[in-house]
Length: 82
Length: 376
Image (cartoon, rainbow over all chains, first blue to last red; front, side, top):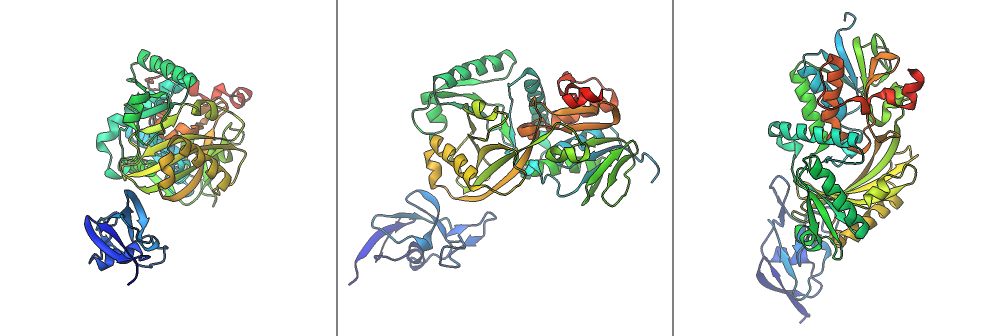
């Protein structure tokens, strides 16, 4: 069994293998809309490699972080705005 | 076209040219505006849009306060994209000397009927929790505000067009004489009076005019609503911005209606190139971080530059060129052109129409300058 970490996504507790990107954890929690564009359209991961900035979420209170670039950590608090 | 088809040809559709066009058209003049590039694409798009009362001199105070009142009067008519917001300014004091300046400034404002409230360290911290601890206090000037300058310029130009003004984009005016300005392709635009509102480019139409380019950098962040609430300006700005020669940076930060944070400011003479210079950007952001450490965690999405049109005595040039009664100047506003555009437009139209002005016009007349006096 791989080591796992526990984090909350929009208040929901999830457990994922260590090293899982936050974007993957959000997707596996069933969400595809990570945030809203300026005009209110749903946005989610597009490039998966930190270039497009579409997958931004709030991590531990810090807004606009690219969820595809951040590994999940124990106790992390992730907020989407989808 | 018959000669003098227009009463006034305004060269430059930045915020000053646009405001002059709106005012002149409103007064019934036949107006043409000539812009080589985009409406509001020069210094207007590189200004923070801080509508601010300044007190370096009585003349600067008079024009900024007069203009601020005009912005407030007009504000109910702005479309949403002008993003007019009366967020107030806090002048931030870092030491005792700057706190003494807070008290002086408060007295100056009070004596002239401008509301201004002294904040102690605790009140400053409550007003702006993201400022670093250990600051001395500040001065809150609640009637100051912000606009989004390119859209404000466009709105003013639309007002002018609604009142019959003609706008010609795409070509510069390369010279002007008694018959009017001439475009690059040789076309004469017949006008009784030409107004040079060319900002930092105004010397190209009026050689010898005492306007120098003073470069500035800006950075804007992604959307972080409520990170900052007022326009914040360090009082150390007084030491840096007033230097006439050396490069300088100052902490000057603004909340946008979008939740974005606009970060300034830098000042450089003698740079003729608009490229973003990493060493200036670094100095400017370092200064900003010294006041607001939390800025380090925000994402910047764009950096850009522009040229302020600076005059030797820090006052704009508004009025006729001595010896060339058909040529008027409305330029040289340095870093205050957004604020003072509306007052400038009034004072220009007052002179063109022989109307009484609401504030004394003499401090801004081109005839006061060295160039003015040699021509006079």
